[in-house]
Length: 353
Image 1 (tube, rainbow, N blue to C red):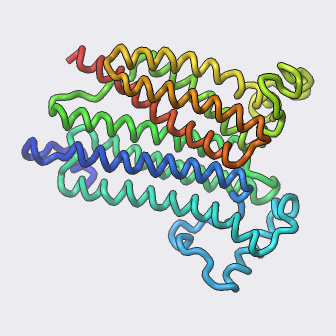
Image 2 (image 1 turned 135 degrees about the vertical axis):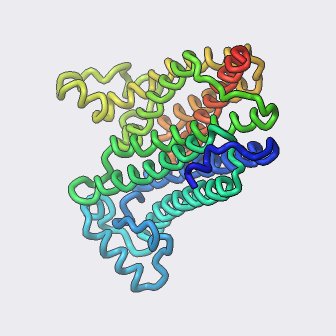
């Protein structure tokens, strides 16, 4: 069946690029949702509440009191329970269990919503030529992201009292990269629906630069969550009354400090944001010049709201609602950036015709 994924349709009307695009946009919306739920899971210290990875049977939560007691007993065996939740009751455990369970359930749903329609479209030979293997690659990337999620959880079950920040960053960045790929492919398919001779958009240098700048910012945002670095300072623009946390320099090798020191990570996340904004401004301007004013507005709106929410989150002492909205807007900024980059790439593809 894999050979059918990229086969030419017997007639021009056999392929269904619009239906494929709408399906991918539904998948993209679900990825945005799981990113937000993942953020809440981290903020509520819920990520280690389920200590086993059961991809099939794990879809059914504990239903009886005995099952809940057994799940709770397994949680009480890991270091996080003794360090953070030593006084938690069964009711409190059910609360943190809910967020991790919802996060994993959404992951399973996304896998099903991606894989099953993909098989359906492939069997009916409705996938346009050249798109089958791209869709399979995106599905594989989603599966890899789930594997990274389990490795992230496992990193916090034996010695640590929380998941390893670098595993958390890897898990989140893979999800956001998948999100960008899904959106880009959906936009290619919508263009193909409008014109069956349309070529896929090209990735232009300005899009690569803006994407890289944003990726660094998002990576440090993930480290902020993993290290709880948002609590390092609650003032802005200074950090505890100072511009730079000079006391951390020289305490460890620089490479370690750049990814493992809460104060330095917080500082970089704060100020690299403006580098990312500068690159996104150029990207948005290029999208507008290419004729896509809506994509330009989306980028401006997303990064503007994101900056305000970031400042508010810090000054509130990492209020959970503001922090979750900050993560939501970050995912939407990825969508807007992919949209603007695609607009520029479509213009280039048309010009080369």
